[in-house]
Amino acid sequence: MTEPHSVEGLEMAEHKASESQSRPQEASTSVKIEGPMSLDSAQAPTGFSSFLIFISKLLTWVLFPFTVFFSVKIVQQYERAVIFRLGRLLEGGEKGPGLFFIYPCIDTYVKVDLRVVSFSVPPQEILSKDSVTVNVDAVVYFRICNTIASIVNIENANGSTRLLAQTTLRNVLGTKTLAEMLSHREQISAEMQRTLDEATEHWGVKVERVEVKDIRLPHSMQRAMAAEAEANREAKAKVIAADGERLASESLRTAATVLSETPAALQLRYLQTLNTISAEHNSTIIFPLPMELLGGFMSRSQPQPLVQSPGFIQNPPGYEALPQQM
Image 1 (cartoon, rainbow, N blue to C red):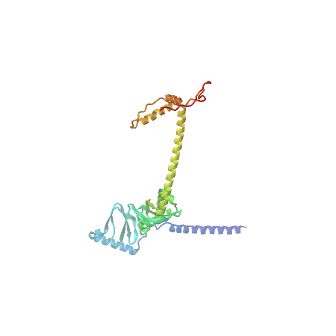
Image 2: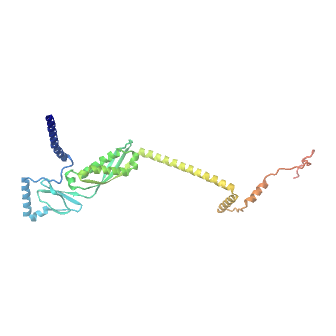
Image 3: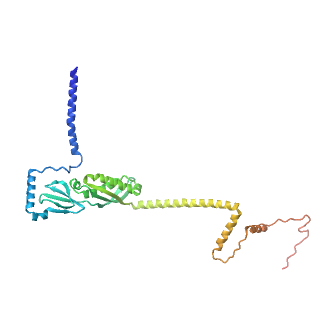
């Protein structure tokens, strides 16, 4: 009964041993695949390389007065120098700013500018999400943040960043509608900056800022948008005028109600009207009269019905009107 268990135990032990042996290999392969080449580790020079280095150093010190012009180099405050010795990256990485020393014939160096560089992205003809063709240009600001990576990992960091900016502009704006392009420029610029920064990180490039300069529309689209904007403005103006008339009518109705209920208010309005008329240059003299007096005159001016006495005969029979004497 114990033999089957022992066989199973041996099989499990062999399986665990095979897994433990395969795991280090997988880890080593994953380390080799991840990321760009290792920049800090430098291979030891071979025997022939060591001999060439020794000869170069010896000749440099023997002929020092003459080799000083070829050995001493200067880089500015905004520059760094990446040195290669016999084609390999020199241990210690970058040099500068200021003076640094190289050995002729075996050392070469490349200067890298650390200042912020700006360039304009040429106008790109882009088809928006809502099938509108627009021409868009932008400006990109970037700088070198890792000098060794910008030399070792890519041939031309500046030119590659320019080309990548063009494709990124087309890809990002191709997912936006025309309204989003016109109203969300800051969000589009921020999205382009993040995309470029992630793509150029292993190149040693840091994208500082991206700005969309101009969005040019076709002439037919410009006319259509102008007509739409004009129609919207006219509609708003009509709505505002209608609201004004409504408010004015409500105010007039309230004023009429107040004037009808208060005679003194009507008298005050009458005096204000006289003041307005007299302010202008005219030859008419106006004498303000009380409203009560005008009311009395108005009542007297109305025709009174004739009241006839019972014995009064207006035109007796046989009466003839005499002709008037001129």
